[in-house]
Length: 129
Image 1 (tube, helix red, strand yellow):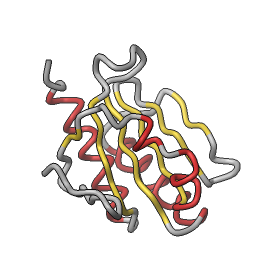
Image 2 (cartoon, helix red, strand yellow):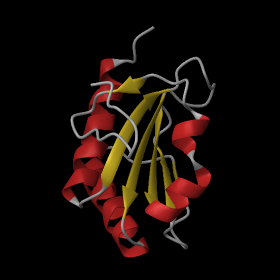
Image 3 (cartoon, rainbow, N blue to C red):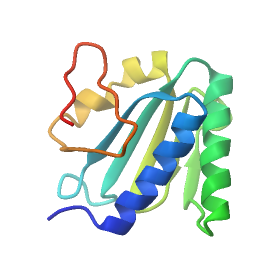
Image 4 (cartoon, rainbow, N blue to C red):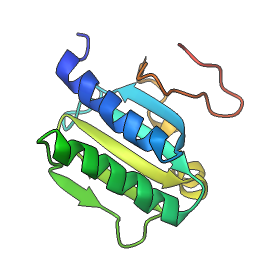
């Protein structure tokens, strides 16, 4: 079953906010059917913990303006990997080092990629777009 258009629109909103704050290697995954707790992941990298904070703030600002709030935000105290849970999708904002260490891209490698307009392949990967 394809991902709901409303969820996809909100994932695109989060991707646009992240890209505006210079996040890179944005990858959106459809995890519908692979996990029971969410339908999608948006993964993005930053160059520093301060940039993680800026990306998280911008995503929060845009969603607040749209009248939406996350269910939960985790990891803000360390700012190396912040998880923003919107229920039907989860945003993961990493420093490059933490993203490489946790390798969620590989862990969820069976999940289809979703085009959100800011997608970039990781080094050594080809884009599906």
